[in-house]
Length: 397
Ligand code: GLA
Image (cartoon, rainbow, N blue to C red; front, side, top):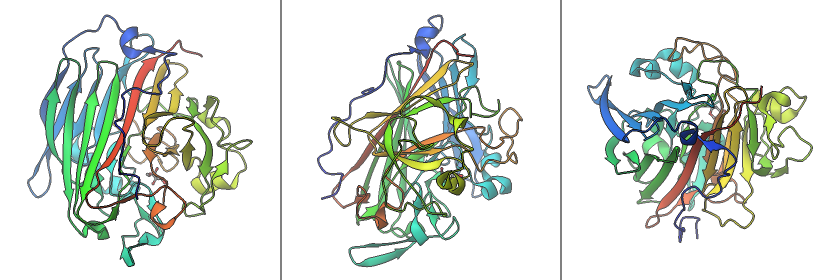
């Protein structure tokens, strides 16, 4: 039996701490009707139009999502003083997401990742006796769904709004054999912006043949504002007592390693940069952090929301909490950004100018029998939820 049967209904907001003021509370001046507006975001070479959905909640938090790749192109939140900034890396035009420089660097800014977030060793797995060959687009390995994953596909969109929430449901049908994967996978991802300053990401998928599925969202955050420099001063708590060490091609060895006494121990909030330069083989392989952390669930049932991470930007006081129904989170400290891409404000995205926390099943699970299964069977529904909650606290210079 795979993990997808008998999934419990996921409660919103479970596991979030209430230590910080919500961004809304910090901005009681800001009240307006939540709204969702459709805008044009250009067109693809084959003429298909790309739309942007502009979501706003009652406190003024606003987020733009485009139908190309389901990419979140901007997300503006207030800091502790009520100053607003866009806290995700990205671009304000389609061409920059499709440029040669972007393809070369392939950072997956803000995109939905599928069918399989993270790596599959040598682009190969065997399922029910059949070996499937996938693109090897990351050295010898398969990464983030292949040459043209869900991040480079056009999704259809259905916006919605009610008294307290606005959102957009995106749909993409991945045909049998696409990028080498078996089965026709119908995927729905819903972004909801709530009155509590949360972005809820709900993933659903069904298939007609057994196939691996591991969907995630690849936003890069900089809580001081995108383009404002390095994130190594951000203090981060990760609710993980183990991580999955990797080989030099970033494929897990299969071990779950205790984080105690290693630079991977973020159980207490610690600046991202405090140990990033340590003499450590795992950090050398990732050129920094690029590792899957195993979330602690204690009494929280598998598939229910658990707090995964809490990140604070010291000067602005912005706080991001992430809760998820997934068993793991890939913490990537933006090590491969190299200043060649120029962001929305015209500033170069240098190394470590953003971080990603990709909630997920563990990398290479199709080849790791001891990891939680990522195989979706016909008749089952893949369900996964991740919640980002934005708030502020007193800045700590
Ligand atoms: C993930 C991977 C990284 C890198 C980024 C995108 O985080 O684990 O190695 O590929 O995506 O550059």
